[in-house]
Amino acid sequence: MNIRTLATSSALATGVIALGASAALADTFTLRIGSGHPDGPSVYVSDVANFFVPEVVRRVSEETDHEIEFVQGYGGAIVGVADTLEAVQDGILDIGAYCMCFETAKLFLHNFPYWAPFGPQSSSEQVAAVRAVYDQVPWLTEQFSSQYGQEMLGLHGWDNYHLGTTDPWETIADLQGVKVGGAGPNLPWLEFAGAVPVQSTLPEGYLSLQTGVYNGWLMFPSAYLGFKYYEPAPYYTLVGFGAMAVNVLTMNTRSLAAMPAEVQQIIREVGAAYEAGSGASLDGRQAAGLTGLKDAGAIITELSQETRTEWAASMAQFPRQQIAEANTRGLPGTEVMGLYLKAVADLGYAWPFEYTLE
Image 1 (cartoon, one colour):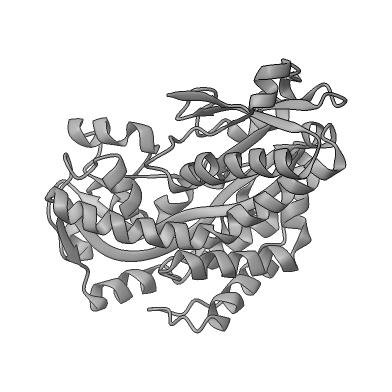
Image 2 (cartoon, rainbow, N blue to C red):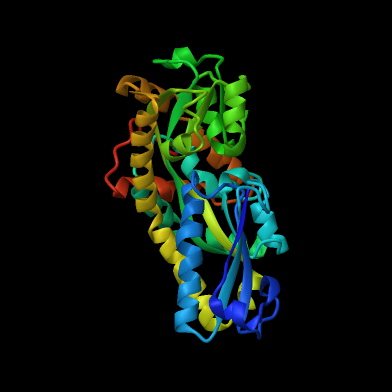
């Protein structure tokens, strides 16, 4: 757990603090910001703590007559990984960072990158492709405000997904019946390989691997290293399911409206900068994660291209299934997935298996 406060000297000197942004006329405002994932192992949370928060504090202090103080709570100190959207909606948090993978009921369509695995391996390319879709389908952004009382400030994501296991494997057949942990939208990847998917979260993964609740984890290098999963599950196979831009930073609309106009503008601009830097941040942490895993003694192997193509081809129907489900819910599933596949193609990325919507 991690709760800390980043305050300005003016706030401490004057003592003029508006709790939860409720006193819009005050010169100094306190905002609660948090995430269920911890700062450090989770790149998107580290970028909140180390970039978004200090940058908002700096700019508000330097460019306006106001000051901002943040009360920060990460790693479940205020809310859990599956409760952050609701916490922002209810005002428990003014600003929340969370993975939309834990909100498959409420944010089902926002998980569309998971529906086409083996996509862009670079987070920079992945974020660019997903941003292109959000720009062309305003409904995606508007859903946060129209249904959940919050404004989307910026996207972020996870670096390239691979598979760590307690035992070595080489072919899809080797995974038959093996229990593997994952987070919601990526669990079907395992079903197509005959593995047994187990819904889980990052904070509980280490103990579950150690005690045999499952024998593998779908996980990107930064977190596999940060959470030390390599200790109970030392075999890390580079599968390349792709980077996923499925994390988001949002702010309660009432809290935002309580800010002076110039402060609102700064918060939005820093949110956009948080997204703009996310791809490079994730790519850097992925490279460092792989190096760190190797140095820590993890046994790293690369899946053969033949097996990778076989696995991708086995999921030919998966995007269509998810689109059909989205359309049934009255969501623009066909439009979103079509635009996503086009955005990836425009990047020049070559899929191991090319998904079609027909």
